[in-house]
Amino acid sequence: MNLVDPTGLSCTETQNGDYDCKIDIVSQDGNKKLTKEQKQFIAKFNKEYTKAFNNLIKERKNVTVGQNEFDKVGDSGFDISGSEVAINLIETKVTYEVGKTYGDALMTMAGDDRTGTQLRIYETARSIERPGDLQEHIVHEGIHGTRSERMGNPLYIIQGQSPYSDGHQKPYNDAARRLLGK
Image 1 (spheres, helix red, strand yellow):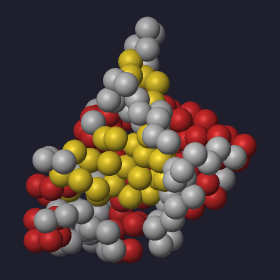
Image 2: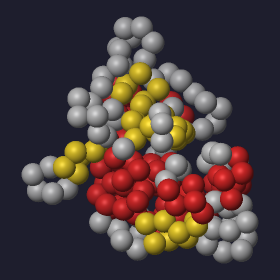
Image 3: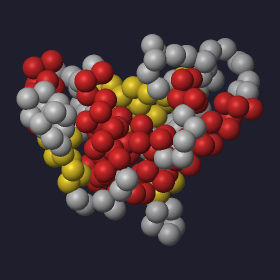
């Protein structure tokens, strides 16, 4: 069963000017019903996604991904704003892959200008318990595929894709925390 957002957007503006964000597609094999825990996770994800997005869309400051010499992504860092990450997320299809894992990944962001981007959320993401951690992971993934990443990260230019090695985790997580004001 695929439950698709009819607007085609993960986040839609509400009457008060904030945004309401949600998973676009719940992808599951066959006609299995969602468990109570999976339904609770979807509600939790949507709530945290909405909080993160509303913080980002108003954020005009830039942060550097790879802020110090030991955290550089590639040979140099790159600057990015919260609003750029928010725009990337609003144009991204968000899919919860029910019952699926992808190694130890919680989420992955993939795609390009031709196919569009897709944020896939795996069952391992349900293990995130600390308040705010889910927001940090959403923002981390939202940095992938942005214009700033494509233009400022030499690994992107050389490999033609976002860095997915363990080496990018700390600088992207640190940038996500700073964009969220942590």
